Length: 196
Image (cartoon, rainbow, N blue to C red; front, side, top):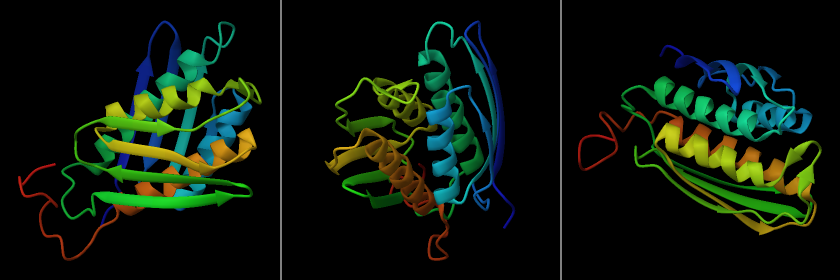
């Protein structure tokens, strides 16, 4: 089986993003967004999902982090969708519950082609590092709608904002890895409709 790869370039008046993404990687990343904590979260996603990613995101950080974070979600969603191709033989569904010290976060995915986000993370600070915590939802919303995935992220417990965010990115990574994986019993696509 050949690696499922995607390269996306997206340039607007607010951001200039280049991403190379491999669904069948080894957890290797070269990530630079200009936002240290966001780099850390994306690196965790890549490493724990066994993806490969090269990402350069240049945004209008003099305004705030919003455009860079949201547009990176758009690009990653497009990259996932492109890399999946026709989705023949994939499991389609994936889920994971990840602990990070006192935090526990659930993520469930359906690569149905129908976008939806159910998001339930509760932060008690406006920022973690130099990222607004509200932007984590914006990232996953943009990603889910551009990938065409049904994405549920639910905090089961947690107090430390860093731990909550990191558990969410890791849970997403493990769930996506599962959903994108192939099952030899699936000869077409896993749908009664014949398409996803």
